[in-house]
Image (cartoon, rainbow, N blue to C red; front, side, top):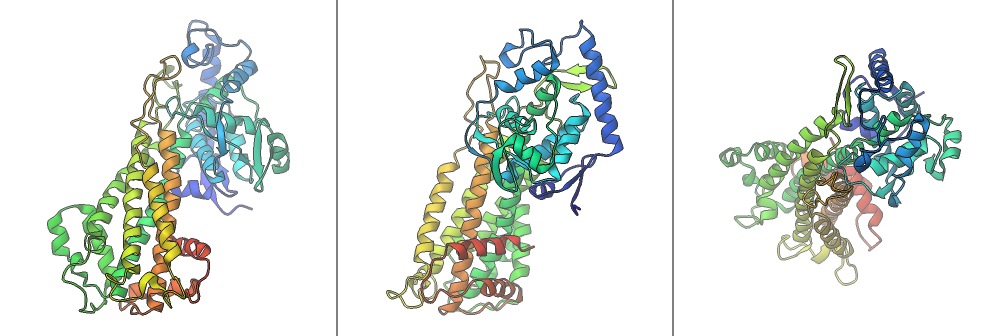
Length: 493
């Protein structure tokens, strides 16, 4: 019995993509089935009409559209998928692969792709199991859809290639059997519709956005905790100041930070003006909020998009050839997400650097070591944060400006949205670790002499950390503590 329920007839949300990482019930309502059946009937009529040329029904694919395809529908399916088996690299994370298939299921369920009902039914059945197609990371340019990765996904659902079940990688045919699933049977239109969309790009962008948003919230809390344990004056959050600044994100962030710091008492020992990593935090975090709201809009639109070519309109008898599989919006959004991630990561690293420096931390011991020299406190973690920030910066080069012509110049401009989205997904995971590193440092700071937080909001954050993270006294490996702290602070509402 699956307690989670996703209805294909309703809009899907980023939270649904997270839920789809585990077994979940996907419901196909009567209205969805009617749309799919109507679209399928239209396809049958088009196949019977020799006067109408429709891409992929009777033609070759991509640059070979000017040549006839295979007459047999099963052969046309094989012809679609076989040449796309050219992916390379490690398998995508399971949650990304399953999220991509949920996005694809929603698009196909709109009835504008002409797929047979068994395609949607087969996807819904898969989500109730632990089945995950093994999809190689490299091969998509995100232009004519995520062709190569989605081809691997659908081939696994046909029992070809490899897949995971209960986390174990095996032959796809065996994985289907273990999961109690029936291999999909497809024709040419089914196969083309399955691969001809940017569902992987959309899914990875959405998952990255969800993770970065959690880290963004954590960064606001941790900045407040830093302010409180060091005894800083919170005047930099004055609403008059932020209203004069005029940016809605900064106003919104500062309002939340003031609430967290409500009741805090400055120590009176700090300098008149704090370093920018504290004093300018509402402006930095506010700009990130405004940027994330842009990404929110792109993801919402993509999750409600029919991403395919051609698109079929049975009610008017129309077939429209175009570019609804072109992932430029998500490419721009994922690149924006990478920029935000880079600056949020830099902020966390700079705040930790301030916290471990006795010149700037109010006289706390260097590296927050309980016995400097005999112990080393946060020294290893601080080194690791430098490496994490460098990795984020190296990866932050925009992908959406890297267009290269391909496919005999049929695809003469491409967005590289898949690269942008998967890169943003990877960077989001590193940002979580940077938040966890700062959180461990804040917990340790109180142990070695910083004051206990004076505001109830900050005290609640600190107490949650102290309950899970022991003091560093004596030294110990802190890799697990950083991950534990990251999970804790990014999960807070």
